[in-house]
Length: 454
View 1: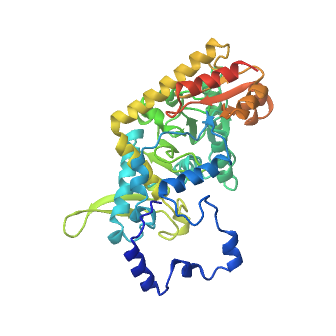
View 2: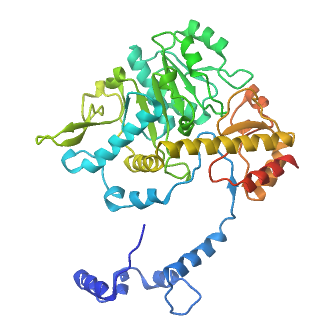
View 3: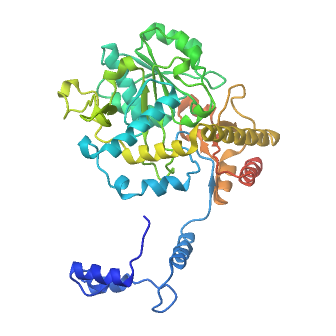
């Protein structure tokens, strides 16, 4: 949080209002021995430090905790460059401390921000309606599956899911369905890493599924041919597209244009750092005809009694709003702050900026792919269209991986750790490598050099 220091006169008046004499009096409830142990040695006896000096002091402490690293991690959570304007606006008190907008008459700012988020998700995905966000891409995918079962009228209707969906997404979906229906039936990938269409057709004929879940880009960084896949599906089988990396929409056709019925995914990279597993912000978009089956919340635009534009929660589906048996979701937050970060980021970039982001990701991966190929490290799936990450066959992977991490480079995700059985054997020396806009050519060259020797 930004800190604005008080002048001596402002400090004196503040202490008078509080009813104490000095700043030290504010800490009088803390035992003296605890306060003594908490004193910091700044290296200058009884001398105050400027803001810059204090930052430098703590930076020095932080350098003892960790070394600088560059990483090439992806697989569902992606790094990005975040403009300073995002924090500058989001950390304003009215955004940072606002509560969920139960009372529209005093929550117009929050409601409009969420409405703009919904609008941007619709424009990105090409879908007609979007909700006010969910917890993350994995739970959004699970909610989409349950919505498909509701629409089918069969709560235990079979679900097909591409085996190339991110493993964490599959785990969450299995958890959501555990007490309601059987787990999804996996459709394997073919030798090129994409959905096996022949196997898909046989599974459709056998199980009569209510939905098919396909990740695009999939876990291997490949763009799936959604329009071709849609042609294989019966009219009553929904095509659910899950997108852990929606930045691909900056370059490729929208899922709606390719036949998707529902588009869900994870938008945290648009304005929020990777951090340590969250917070994230899931998005959920679909066709207007499925509006009343949409989980979570929806913010609508209307007019007030004076004819002025206003916003309100509409079609709320929580148990507190409607009878429990008719509730479609128990989501009790709209992840408003992270959704706002997403909205600010996308507004700041604009259409051309988003295209430039996609072009940067694509060109960085192209450079990585060519560099590794020239050192005898090929892509595992060579014929497919990759966006920003891919699976590489690395000889002696475990040794080279450990050597790189010891030198401050996390080269990617070892896929043998993500799968079991025959799939684990297939990925024995497979490394999933992802690039992001913060990478320099020198960092990519260092990765290539490390993976090529060892």
